[in-house]
Image 1: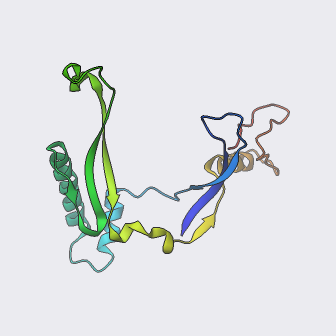
Image 2: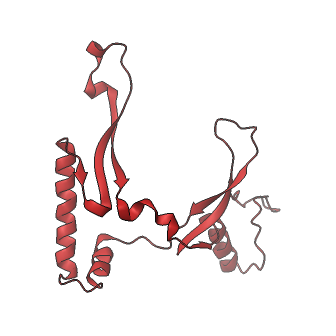
Image 3: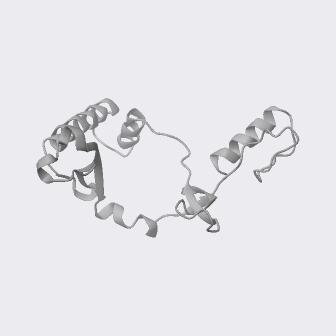
Length: 163
């Protein structure tokens, strides 16, 4: 089940445009490599969690090495991984210097067959935004029974705006 909240957003390029409601994914937890490996092992795998952690760690190291070596990596149903370059332009090709003009390397993931149509299998659960949940917890700790989620200031003016 995919948790989502609804946020009101405008167009950054058009400050006058009316805001519209959009869904934003809300994750319930962050799973680290050890927890992920334990999850894999719980699916009847012959390998133990420690073996899976070692394999995934080696896979990350090797992917990094190969991507930096100019390779594109195709991992079956998982998809393809490749480098893209974020750079500024030079006036002429002869003036282009990678040390000056290349600003960032990005790793792009192109999903494989099992990831392309996740929407067909997804179910959704509406939850509060992280900001709204934080305000509720703050109010509960303060013994308050009402929480203003409109983004308007209270008498003290200490409520942050909710998106």
